[in-house]
Length: 449
Image (cartoon, rainbow, N blue to C red; front, side):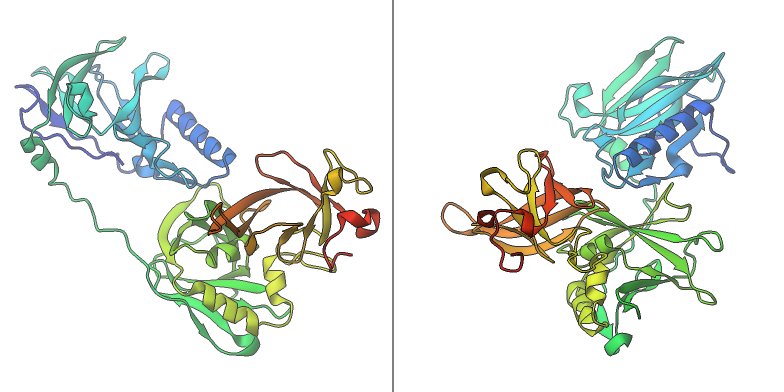
């Protein structure tokens, strides 16, 4: 959120005095133009595959900056985040984007849209006329970008006119630091632990600010389940509705959504472990960004990051203790001839753009084993294969560089059908072929003969 930086002294003009702009309490209904902008930002985020994380209380502020005595609305874009874009979509060295909707005879229209470091409604004269005070990029005042530049604008009904512009001073900076920045964000650094034995084994971490515990356990019919115990004060969904938990990996640049249902007679929420969530919990990140949705995923709330200290070892220990087949089912719906990781059949695949099963181009085929993709003649060593979303997956390998030194390499794939996938960005069409349809010289896997 953009917070006031300017002071109530006469630093900008002899007659300037600040008018604090604070959200009304209780919140007022937004004008339809503001609501339409909010809805479009949400739609844009969801279309890009992200989770919409709004701060509704600070997204739109009613104020008066045009001097006509009628209410105006200032919209803070940084209060409408998208999980896969962070703040970067609307913020930069010039600050964060704001929009101002001014009153007119037909409602409201947008009269300002730019990046600013701060804004304030200000009085321009003794007659009570108001204007807009801004802190902007230092280059606007002919200085370096990091310097403070303060300006006051007046709306004349058609455009903004500059009333005054000057460089900020140390006095401005010291006066702006008196506002309480609030407590630092809560951190979670606890280690995952394993307890119990056999089918009763549990891998869990405690001490999260919003959850008393986050645990994984074996399911009697195979697979793993996640259970969370909400801490006191955590917002919960309406009775009988699922709690959605979103995980985001900065290192993998991928997300997962875990659905958890309330357990009868308990405060716990549980559900079958999402295979993508399992992969992120066992990833190389030190923690995962965490979000919660109480309305089926329409909007999300950011929670404290979840520590992954010791998570990989703990989950592997759990999988060893679970009933046979649990680890496989936790990673995907495995069946006879089915990959343990991907919802695809084990076997050979050819590029259908230029091949048929009987006549693969240049006798090229690749082989999907239960836990990896194998290519004939590859000098790379397999590291991992994991789902990164509902229809994408990633294989990581260690490949020698020109000097023979091992270097990490990743390939991202997209599932295009029940028996096909493509390499992201290449438009190929790897399609399953039964081994008896392929010519002998295209086959190379001992298990896939």
